[in-house]
Amino acid sequence: MKHPQLNQAGELTHLLTLEGLPKRILLQILDTAASFLTVNQREVKNVPLLRGQSVFNLFFENSTRTRTTFEIAAKRLSADVVNLDVSTSSTAKGESLLDTIDNLAAMQADTFVVRHSQSGAPFMIAQHLNKTGQQHIHVINAGDGRHAHPTQGLLDMYTIRHYKKDFTQLRVAIVGDILHSRVARSDIHALTTLGVPEIRAIGPRTLVPSTLTSMGVHLYTDMAAGLRDVDVIIMLRLQHERMRGALLPSAGEYFKHYGLTPEKLALAKPDAIVMHPGPMNRGVEIDSAVADGPQSVILPQVTFGIACRMAVMSILAGNTNT
Image (cartoon, rainbow, N blue to C red; front, side):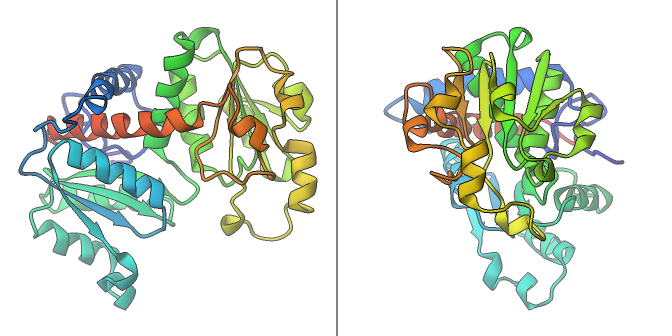
């Protein structure tokens, strides 16, 4: 099974990628997240949906914000949360990934939230659990290599719907290091499924793969042309840790051509929103005047992210993998 995400009833049992997910499931998650947003605004923020269940955060790659928002989301659903310090775990001592999974499964895990530097690791874990008769354990991909980051894609979709309502009338520009970005891939798959008619990818030739045209994405190497009349701008972080070789002349040169400044933002529609998955490199991909300006929705994205991750965990908990 290539994408073991759905059970025989077509319900979500793992969240591994947004690629190929039906529109009805994307909307189910967004609608459920909307209900949790009101919970997050209450004085008492906990609901008992995951009481008695154990959520294991398995972060084989660092990410303070993603892990923290998953932890907050699970605790607000009343789950027991275990954060595994992978740097001191058995995997650092030579134990295989799947041996680690088997040992944690024996501790009565209900959900694994997995972040890994290798593309496909969450898929492998989900397939292994299915083969070993542990289908009751759900796997959520919190980012794998350069492949996918589905919950970030979902919170981006929630943000866009919150501010723009109708996906079918939008021009969306994704700007920056698209080559190394799992967020960009997840966003493109979701935007396409939700009916966005025009998706633009903007960046230097070395960081914008030409294969995106097969997904219906319009490629731009000129920032001014790419931003003209867009409704949504998604800025991406330069991922130096995944780059091999000299793909950019310098950070200053990059900012000159592809950094989002107030002048460049003015080329988009007057009510365009600016998004960023974080962490931001101010003065490299985005000017502080834009990041902190009235069109920025970067901080609301974080708030929406907690609600979206609550939605995913609650939906998975209600579905069995049969």
